[in-house]
Structure formats: C-alpha cells, structure tokens
Amino acid sequence: MIHHHPDTRLLSEHASGALELAPSTCVSLHLNYCEQCRRRHRQLQDLGSALFEKLQPRNVSEHLLDTVMARLDEEAEPLSYRSPSSTAAGDGGYPALVQRLMRGDYADLDWQRMGRNVRICRLRTGDRNNEFALYHIRASGSIPQHSHRGNELTLVLEGSFSDEEGRYSAGDFLMRDAQDRHTPTATRDRDCICVGVLDAPVRFTDWRFRAANPFLRLQAS
Image 1 (cartoon, rainbow, N blue to C red):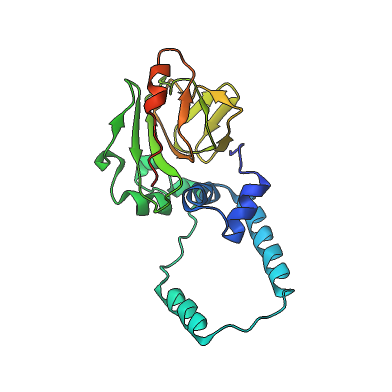
Image 2 (image 1 turned 180 degrees about the vertical axis):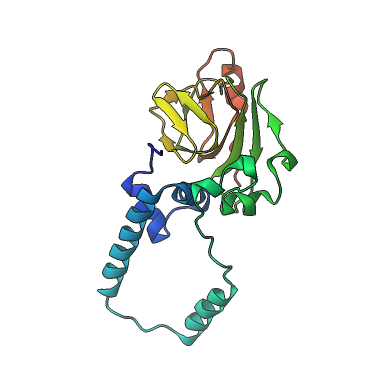
C-alpha cells in the first residue's frame, strides 16, 4: 500500500502542464502506481478544463494555428498507466516511462559507484534545469547523510528504504527541501532502486563526505 504522495501543488502543476519535465516524469511514475492520486489528478484536470472554458476566446493568426496543429500531428502516443502488479522490476515489467528512458534493462545501464553500497545512473529527459537519475542501494546500504541546496524528489521503483522520517516502498513519493536532512537506508532483505530528481546538488552532512561538497555539480538531464 502506498503511503506517501505528491502534495496538491505538485499535482496541480503536473495536471496543468506547468511542471518541468524531470519532476513531471517523477510525478507521472507515482501516478502509475497510485489510484488515489490518479483520481485527484483527474479532478484537477477537470477543474482546469472548466476554468479554461470560461476564458474569452481570442483571435490567432493562421500561422500560429498551423504550427499548433502540426505539433499535434507529431506528438507520440501518450504513455498509459499500468497496474502495480505489472510494473515490478523483477519481472521485467518496468513502468512505461522508465522503459522509454532506459532503452534496456537495469543491468545494461551505465552505473557509477558512489561508495561501496550505492550506484547511480543519470538518464536523459531533455530537462536542462533538473537532474534525473536512478539510484541502486544495496540491501542494508545507505546514501550518506545529506541536506539539500534545493528540492529533491524521490520515487521508489523496487524494494524499500527508510530514513529519519519513515519507511518507503514501491510507488511511494517523497519531496525534500533545504530544511531536510536524511540518510536513506535500504532494508536488510532486498536492494532498493529509486528515481531521484534534483534541481541543485545535495550537501553531505556526514563528516566523512563533506570534503566532496565543493565538487558536487548538478548534471542536468
């Protein structure tokens, strides 16, 4: 059962199309798992549509209309949601968004080590302002304690982890900001794979890793 969800602001921005691409992808992945948020998302879309219909129409040039229609013709088929039972990484049924970004299997990705227990693979979404990455935490392993210079969104894909605030399993969505400090730690029985979206580098607070802080850079996707 999913216990952690995006707040109303994030869902509203996603429903209106105002959310940047990498954060929007992270929210979409949560919607893939969460029927509760899908219902809220549809309600927000309906509300936006009702407000849009009340706007006064404006004349546009034929060139603008042709441009918009051409872009509609070029749009790919929308990604459909899949039930949680078909999205477990262990059976190869990754969420459609992850499949599209990965173009392969977890084992085929270009993983980079962050110490003994953590690997990271940055994926390209086309978002120049945010980093989008997969994190693989070995069973019982931890990402060193850190705070944030901006916002961090996390979506659990496989396994689970805990931090100072609670425990998070597949489909759970977290948002951390500059006020938060935590140490994500995978459970003892299983590795954890999750999506992380950053709009600024983290800042390690564990004294063993603080020397790395000046060299941390955001790698936009």
